[in-house]
Structure formats: structure tokens, C-alpha cells
Length: 139
Image (cartoon, rainbow, N blue to C red):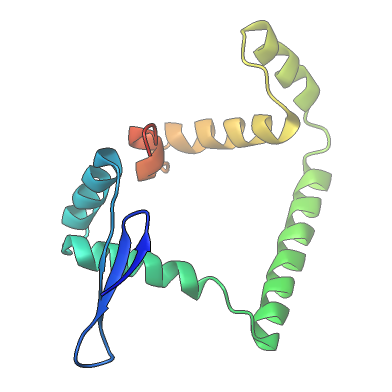
């Protein structure tokens, strides 16, 4: 067994395809993972493995991966620019001022996010992610 400190250790099994680790988690994070594992019909180990694996899939640092990421960023930027040009007649500053009078101080990006979330929520298209449903206090 090799110990890394702070609750991390691992044991290499007889085959090199699997490694066992010991991991300390807050009680809240553990319960969130257990609940999500049940919702996804996975074991706790399966849920943690799936989440860790997907986090690495997001990072494709090959030349092709970087080019693809740049294409995506360019497309997103173009789309946002086109959206801003299309909605330039919207009085976002007026909306922000009205919200501020009600005690909801926000920047333009927060205002757009708020409007979009409220609109989609009213129509049943918003599903709160686990971190917003429960909060991440104590992690």
C-alpha cells in the first residue's frame, strides 16, 4: 500500500487493470454521491468512477482536440454575438434597474441568465442540478 496523506492511498492488485483507493469525503458529499448513484442505478464506486472518467473525457489536449475546442468556442462566440445583435432593442438596463429596486442586484450576464432561467422554468424545461438542489455547504 502506498499512502499519499489527506486520506488518499492506493493498493495495486495482482492485475494492473484495477487500483483500490481509500478516500475521505465529507458526510454531505458522500450522501449526495449515494443519492445520485441510486438515481443513476449505479453503485457508489460506479458513480464516482463515471464522474471521474467523464471529467477526463472533457480534456482532449491533442492537436485535433484543441482545434475542435477552438471551433466550438468560435461557434459559441458567433452565436452569442448574433443573439446580442438580434435582441439589441431589449432594454436590459431597464430590467436591471427594476430588479435592483426590488433588491436583486445583478450584472448584464446575470440578468440574461435570470431571464432565460425564469422563462424556461415557467415552461418546465429547467431541471436543477444536484449542487443547486442541495447546496454545497460543508464540502
